[in-house]
Image (cartoon, rainbow, N blue to C red; front, top):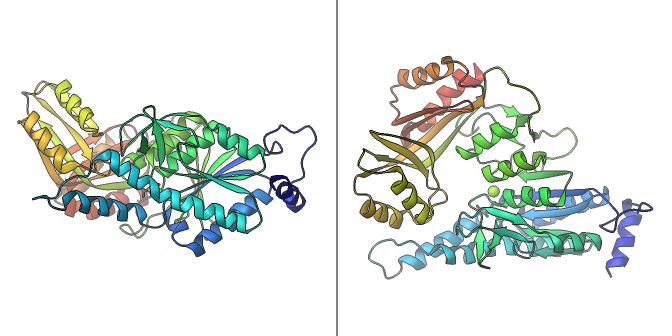
Length: 428
Ligand code: ASP
Ligand code: MG
């Protein structure tokens, strides 16, 4: 059966080269990732199947990573919260281990449906979960990091001439527990696999045609960015840009895999895309590339009295990631994005009990200008502070580095701040 299809595939467009390696026909490997909106219903899954088959016909060995259908992950999360709070006096957090068991099912649905759709088109395909694909992670449930990728089964199936479909966003810890990789983590699966398989490139398909200089829903004159450096995109993603997840860009930066961010349904000749590569250029002149924002962040402030190691240990035990840490003898601060903290209600109570003088400020958003060389002179930071203060916005915290100028503002001020900073730094 496999051979029959492999013959047909060859006839249809990829002649086996003499002396080719046993894997496929020595064809270059292409990893494609399709986001939730691209696989939102069976009709769209069929259109994705057509694209995958076209890539196979064009002579690639194809590995496809899928997200869960549409808003499935949000729906499952809501069900878990409902189950956790049923019978409880106050809203309660579901246990992270069970969340991972639940959320990982979303991607299993789309992987199987896509494999079925590809087979219906006469091509051999097989779907694998994250653990079957050899994605090994640490044991931080809900926000696990990939430690190692051992894609042996994928390589075997490619060698048999099959198209391999992988459930994104999930892996297995060394304790053989199912883990998930943080929201948006299917991108990370795709890039980590591309690196491990020595893929030519990794294509990230979604409902937008690449990366913009701001969120176009907030900043109408946001510009499309045709090319970007990995380090800049990683900084953007870490501070709220949604197109590609930050861990995925980090893998790309470390491994040198080139990323192509494209729109699923208007990707043809002439369609726009963003190409993301490790920069080979030397130090660049100061240049702002984008304005990004992230809602739902918490500012944690310790006014002396707490040692840094106490705060960090507590955050580590609670499985809370943070950024923008600064500490000195008068106290310190750090910023906690809540996107990958599903149990903040409980975590907040634990932190308050453990570290009574730690102040937690909620209802904030972070707004950042991201680019190159932003700390080369004081001018960009001075401008950043002035733009906000002229608008009557007084940040709770301001941070500055070569790739980013950032401020924590009230959630209600975030949109105005994005528009003003974009006008001054990117459009101006
Ligand atoms: N389905 C997961 C999420 O919604 C992972 C992903 O889409 O990449 O976050
Ligand atoms: Mg996504």
